[in-house]
Image (spheres, one colour):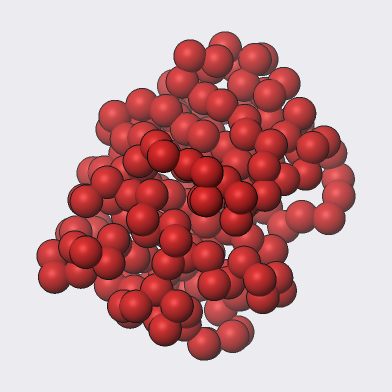
Length: 183
C-alpha cells in the first residue's frame, strides 16, 4: 500500500528502529497483520506503524510524547491520506496506558533504551491486548535482564538484531496458549 514511500523526519534525540529489524519483525508476525488494530507506542518516526499499514493492518494508533514528533506524524498521516485509519496521539506512554480502553491485536513498544521508568510498562501494555494479541517489546540486547518479573511471564520468543533485542509477549491471562510465529 505504501511501498516505496519515504518519510521525512527531523533530526533529534531518538533512535529509530532499523529497517532490517522492522522488516524482520514484520515478517515474523506477517500472518497477524492483515486487519490488525495496532498501537505503535513511543512511535518516534512512526516507521513501524506505517510498515503495519503498508502490510494490511486495519488501523494504527501512534503514541508519542514529543509534541514536535507527534505533529510530524500528523503531517505524514495527512500527506499519505491515512486519516481514516491512523491517529497520532500526543501522550506519555504511561498516561496512555492508564487512560486507554481500546484493545489491540499488536502493540509495538519501543521506549528509549535507558529509560528505567518505562521498562516496567510491558505488564500494563499486555492488558491493552485482545486475548489473542501480542506485545512486541524492543530494547537493548546488551542488557540481558528480561522484564519477566514485571510482566509475570517470560517472552515466548525473542530475537536479537545487533544491539537490539525484540521480545514477544501475550496477555497474562492467555499465557498457556502462545500464538504461533513465523520464522
